[in-house]
Image 1 (cartoon, helix red, strand yellow):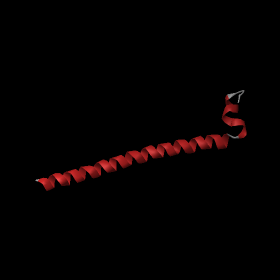
Image 2 (cartoon, rainbow, N blue to C red):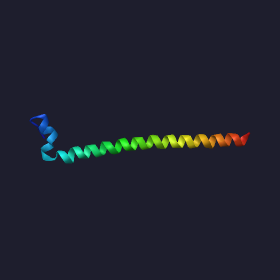
Image 3 (cartoon, rainbow, N blue to C red):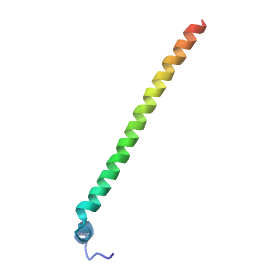
Image 4 (tube, helix red, strand yellow):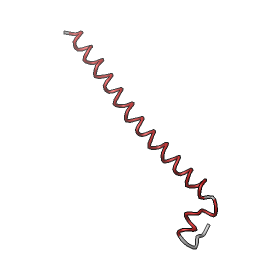
Length: 60
């Protein structure tokens, strides 16, 4: 598809809402996934730290 101007490009032949909305939802979901992964990793590492600390205390 060829566009005569940047405004034609952003209008996407009349499908701008669908196209840019799809990009927005996809980017939003990817960012949410990364944030959730970071939170999950932090939670698991904290849990492992508590478990290891309890195991070390039990060995003494």
